[in-house]
Image (cartoon, rainbow, N blue to C red; front, side):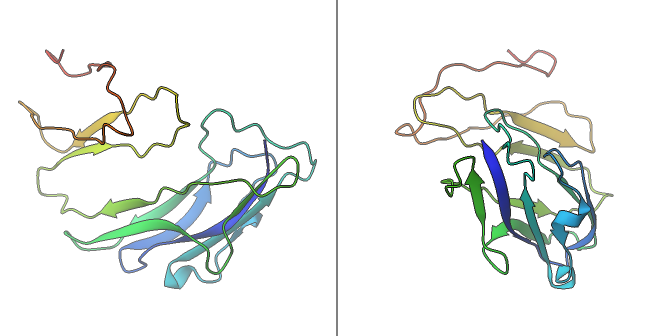
Length: 174
């Protein structure tokens, strides 16, 4: 159960231009929980606590908030969107007021020319507990009609044990 969270998110401001934050999914979370004084250098800070001291159950994955950007970079540029301890220390606190052991997974945005036919295939970043089962989505988006696709997906068998493939959403894929 989550009682509070805080930290910093950094990005390259020559690739992304911050617009606003939306989609608040924690009790009491609002625009007032975000700091934008360093947004021109690519730093967004956040700080939230459950003022009722009831704590929030995060046993299921939730989307906490969304950051909206304008993409201003040129084709071929990219930026990591990452969690940082600077200037606000990364910290999550549980219902017993202890600091939680937290794993942070950063993201990346790549810029492409909108006139080019592009296909994006991505594998979501995931976190899970040991001895649990996960279903890892393989995502496909693009700006062209797809006739075929092939490839290989590799993983560390000392960390994951293959079970099966499911969720076939292309015609003829089985």
